[in-house]
Length: 400
Image (cartoon, rainbow, N blue to C red; front, top):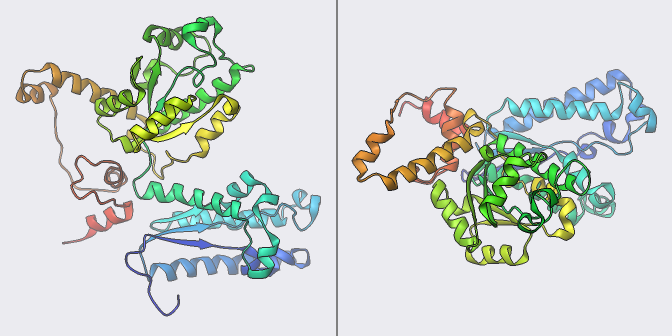
């Protein structure tokens, strides 16, 4: 509101910039505008955006989630629009580019791409013109859920709630069929159907690995059968070096997942379990409610890649060298744990690690990592408070 400040305990400010509300000229009268008028109107909106962000910042340091302008699916000049450099589509695109760049230059401010939400649903499921004309509320209930889901990817990341470990079943998840019955040559995995379903899924898993997600295996199988596929199948994209920990046996999967969390020293609430079996996913849901579960039944197996990507559970707003090397770090953690078990006393164990500690002041290079650690780590965060990069920067610059 204009006459009262936002509460200091506000966590997030959500801004929706509907072009029809902010600029009738660019949204409904575009055909009537000349290039100079278009430029003037775009500059007016850019100044409005700067002023609005400045006004919010005078009242709160809360994270701003600014929802971008939606691109028209029926642009002003029809098919001619896509042939012109001064098209309505390109003008709105330029506004979004400005918005993305400007927010990126501001502390704790983020651009939410509404066109992703619109594209996922399609325009007929996204807008309800009845609501728009009656109360200037343009979205269907389904669209509101999609937008909320997109917003919570940001909220989850900024609150340090992003997941860090993916626990994978093998049979009918990493490949089609059961390796213990079908053998190495009999499983479905390759660049043509039906093996392409699993090949593309593995492509995405390798991308997740490169983003810093810890990949682990939890499979009811003979261990040698599984590793034979990893080592010898020509279409196997996942390799042993991608896997931080594995439990391949005939034990209860909930027990195995708990053991993986202990071995890697991560919380159960940071883990996501993927399986095709109704029995297994229900067992984990009931036994380990902290673990997020993604059920990919065989009836929806062609959607496996989209189901993984759409969950947004691993989305973050930072990407560091540590993220790239995360699996190696956690493998080292597991090795240290084994060493600790095999070493007679704690003093000998610590000495065997040959650790060196460097102490220095926070700077522009270390602040992103410090903020990331406050959001992800519990063991050394005694307050369990989560801080953004802006928060850490303020601490570093504060004389007190």
